[in-house]
Image 1: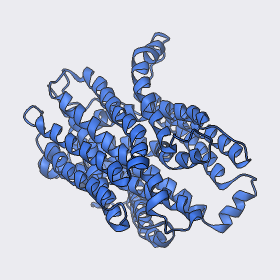
Image 2: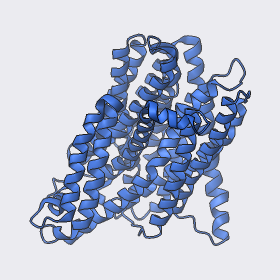
Image 3: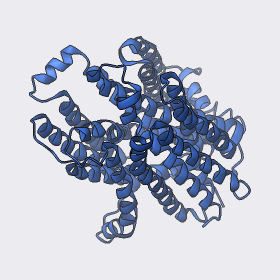
Image 4: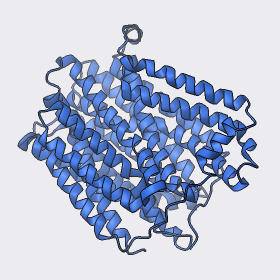
Length: 503
């Protein structure tokens, strides 16, 4: 095992404590403190909107971090300097607990810092391995994911208590201290790391090949599809008054990527000659990966709502006076720490003995399906709450267990999948696209919440005889199950790659 790995793992544990420590108390703090000027019946919806907008930012900025790393500063330097930005964001949250503009600026800095380093730390782990020891990489990615949840567990358990007993300055300040410690640990290992050189500006890069395919000398139907996507993207910006600037901008990005990707796929062969076969084949490989990422986005729609929709549901459930609704989220990382070793030591070997190979894509497809099952359970619990039944918060253990099992199958597997499938020159950017799938997942949540604000839509839902909240829960469950089915169909045709560097 490379000796530098402990520095990266320890850094990640502290950084994840800092992130989940502030993230998991964000919704309760907004509702009980920062948004008190908003009418009470609108407060919960506004808190959800702020939370998911923040998460969108966190998973959008990996695009910037990946680009800066791959083209200018390298992974180590980009992670170090953005970590300092991250620390400043935490300081703003602690200082501006009663100033909405200062607090939101702190959220922006955390989104920039956390998002910017997110794809780089995981790909930096992969850089420490080569083809001679790549068998250890999956174990380290699992350990990497385990330490993320180790930090998340203690943050989820302790921060709601600190928020209640000591106030927002302390509750948001402690994660800031942990982030500073994470930065120091990462800096301490600087002389031990493998530093993959920055790629020189490449005339045959992914974007250059796509540009040639779409707008080169041989334009065709694919060009028309890409142009339609651009026009639709500009049109989506007119929705800013209805869905907000962040959601509208992300929707525009999705339209450009979606239509542009389809158009490039149709005309990619026209780029041969202008670009070498290796570059063109690499772009086709990336486009195949992006289809996988797109089909994972519904999972993130469901997963990230455990820190918003599920916390709000927990508020309406019976529980001991000392227990805070947000503390229920500690169950998720606790289960992850149990399930990762259980899967690797017992479940996966058992399936292998039975002659069933749980490939990375099979695991991810199953994970999406399990998230859908979790939301079916949550939906039925909401029906009981809406009917006036006193439901204990203990019942949330079941959907948490289903969702967490799905998370382990999707997220832990996806990290290694994204790295192994990416061409060598595009590790940072591909990991950024993996994180962008989380942004798009949260975009679906914002669009769903915006749609139910329409009186016409609300009236249609009322005619079903169930509440808007319960309807949305069953909608998201169906969304995930449909995605799991489509994922399974696509996985049958996907050809796995081995893109680790040579020894």
